[in-house]
Image (cartoon, rainbow, N blue to C red):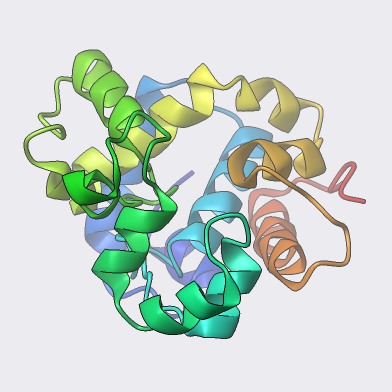
Length: 213
């Protein structure tokens, strides 16, 4: 189901369709993403999270307003102004003391910032991927930026969180909530995910997009 031609139809701006098609097809087979409903939901989420497989490391170059909107619990207005457009400092502050990371000074936030098509984030998840997949992403988290390792990490995350079951029942809203931590039917980013899902369903012959509201 996943070919370079399919990816180019789903993601018109994809820069490496051949490499990603091979990697995604292999990962989908390995982790039971093996019917049109599963493939459509998985690739829609991946396409959104990775800007069509072109941005596989998290962009944390936020201005002050973006910081307050994205990480309101971790920055005051004054702190947001101070940290604005310093991605490494932002990551180390925003991801400190959670997701298995150490404190801000440890550098874990930046080291284990989101990578791969579904933006695997945090030391705990990298340790899990290291054990489950044999990818040494604790010492070398940048490995998750490569198509083969990135695709496997996204497919493993998908299966271990039970998203195949949601995809089978076409509960795309619950998939989005599981991937992103929240879902609102009219939020621009969620509408963007839905756009990819509808295109993928059409390409794969899935006639009913299911529960997306």
